[in-house]
Amino acid sequence: VTQSSVLLDHKLTSLVQTLCASFVHGGHELYLVGGAVRDMLLGRSAEELDFATDAKPLQTVALLETIPGASIYRVGEKFGTIGVVLDGVRSEITTYRAHETYEPSSRKPVVRYGSTIHEDLSRRDFTMNAVAVPADALGDTGGWVTSLIDPFAGRSDLALRIVRAVGDPVARFREDPLRMLRAIRFAVTLDLQIESATWSAMRNSAAAIATISSERVAEELAKLLVIEDPRRGLTLFAESGLLAAATPRLAELLTMPDHGPNHPLSLWDHTLNVVRLTSPDLVTRWAAFLHDIGKPSTRTFDEHGRIHFPHHEVVGADEGRRVLQDLRRSNALVDSVVQLVATHMQLHAYSPEWSDGAVRRLVHKLSDDFPRAIDLGLADARGHGNTSWGASKIEALLDRAAGLSHVSEKLESPLDGEALMERYQRPPGPWIKAVKGFLRNQVIDGRLAPDDKATAGQMADEFVDSMGA
Ligand code: ATP
Ligand code: MG
Image (cartoon, rainbow, N blue to C red; front, side, top):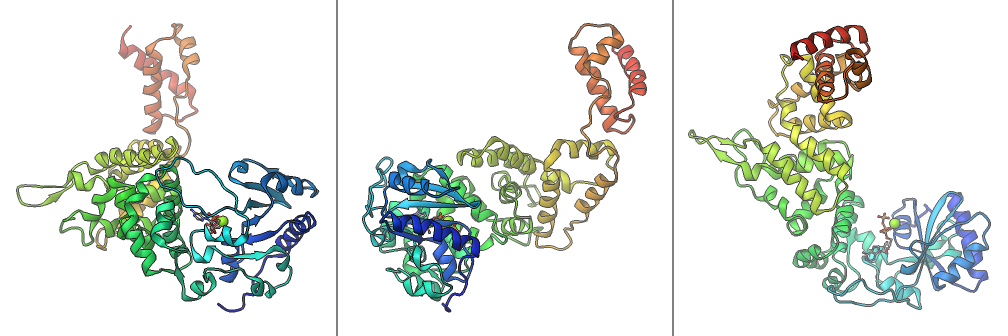
């Protein structure tokens, strides 16, 4: 690692100085730790600041209260963490933790405080994250490196470009299986290799990922999915055995034996391409990852021996819903992803013979997810591996939708229930829904302008007549 020149910008430097003055004045130690120090060693600027101190949370709060303009957040207090926002920058200050090993089966581990920065660093996950710099050494550019506290040679591992667990990797992954996913994320985002003993421990311990909360897994997985090029991360996720352990419903994506002669790529390689080719938006990336999940279970051969995946998008929407529900994702995310999976074949079926109404209906069904559906459709076509399977249909659909009137408005019947009751002097009832539905269809099909109440009235008259009494 070259002598790092990147330090904190002026704002962060003055923030560190303010915090430091208050802690040192109070007779306490304060270290910048973890990711921020790692990023500085890599010559990147740190964005969030984590500190470690010997002060207990209550003492930390008291010290912070002496700083004018500091907002203090105590949500993490029982885990030893106090948050502070100063000058618009958020920092977390955590009391030294003891390094204790606990059985994975034990309930929530109780927090025990440590007494030294070395003890605190020894319970951290990777050597490059088990580094600290005393806050009072952070004033001058470059000079801080000589004060680096680096008991596990994280700096040299960064120079070797490897991710290595602190101490015995098997024990560290047993303590907290989430670390395996973090190893993958750091390897991908920082462009590092996973050191071989650490990697073998991951392969041997992958099953343990199933013992931790789905929320933690899903949040870490989300970070992998939105990396600009997530292919390496997803490959490591699969090769480590973590994919099969964390999301068993996805295991067949990896192993489906035959994707058919029209598909030059395996299902897994196609899936990776599609994920890569969508923009890094979490909903779209989940939809891309899951778009063909229905293929393994619908794969059939006809009498000519040709492969088919009948209704794989419908079955896939259902299977995708279960994957995301297992991971306890929000209803909003689940609904959008399911809808995108369910409609992905419909987009490929687009032809210029579609009526305006059919295009409007699709756009309205997808609503805010329409741009994502186009993004997914284009990626699906381009990630097919066969250039003749063009993206031109999706492009044509996009053009068509853009050229249609009233496509982006909320299309409703020009007459609402009140107006209809007034017009026909009839009490509320199911007839209103029928008339409104009829009028809305006229709007969607382009026979009626959304604001043309007069024509709507005439059309409604005819419809009501035809309905009979
Ligand atoms: P980034 O914020 O860029 O994702 P980071 O290293 O700052 O990376 P955080 O999740 O913010 O990661 O955690 C801060 C520090 O806390 C880490 O650098 C590491 O020292 C420690 N840490 C976080 N999670 C774990 C864990 N599961 N096991 C052990 N140590 C951890
Ligand atoms: Mg961080």
